[in-house]
Picture 1 (cartoon, rainbow, N blue to C red):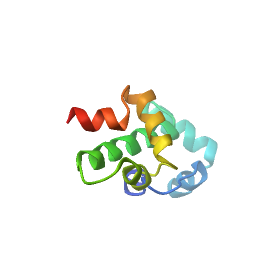
Picture 2: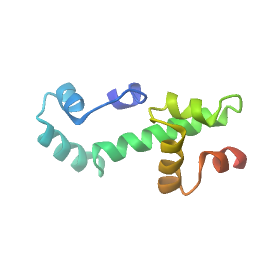
Picture 3: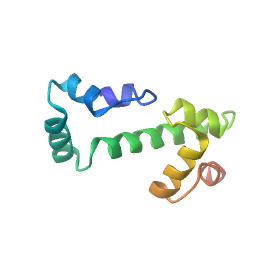
Length: 96
């Protein structure tokens, strides 16, 4: 899937719609109907899952995992994980 393969890149709705050959509004509607969530929410979950895989490798810093997962900063990853997963990257790493 395009989003999974480009998880660390800046992706806009226009980029995603273009890949599918749809207008932005039609893409959002079709995506949400198909996946049960808006494209940004889906991408955010993909990025968090990618960051969690990277964090499982103990030699990688949280900041590196954030960058390689498409987050703008360690702080952005931390707030997204806390909101969506209920745990910060530090807590996630120490549970493993």
